[in-house]
Image 1 (cartoon, rainbow, N blue to C red):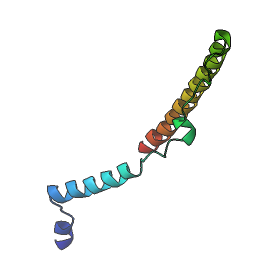
Image 2 (cartoon, rainbow, N blue to C red):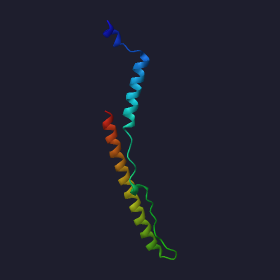
Image 3 (cartoon, rainbow, N blue to C red):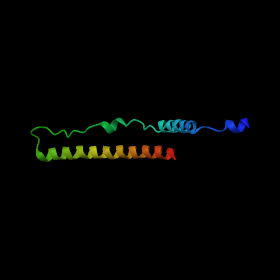
Image 4 (cartoon, rainbow, N blue to C red):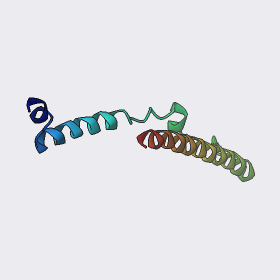
Length: 89
């Protein structure tokens, strides 16, 4: 009889155990820090008095570098997120 009654837990106790387990699980899903490269900002390097065609080329190259960085960082973020989501299953 004691074994039977010992297995009974109140709703509150079961909820507390479930909450603790869920909290532990959620704490393990912390994303790593963003790579330093993802925080870098680009400058065109255009100088006062430069011909407009040169300024346009410099600006276009800077924009290309910035767009490539955004894509790399977004891909990294998606891969990390997918790994965390897979671990949640």
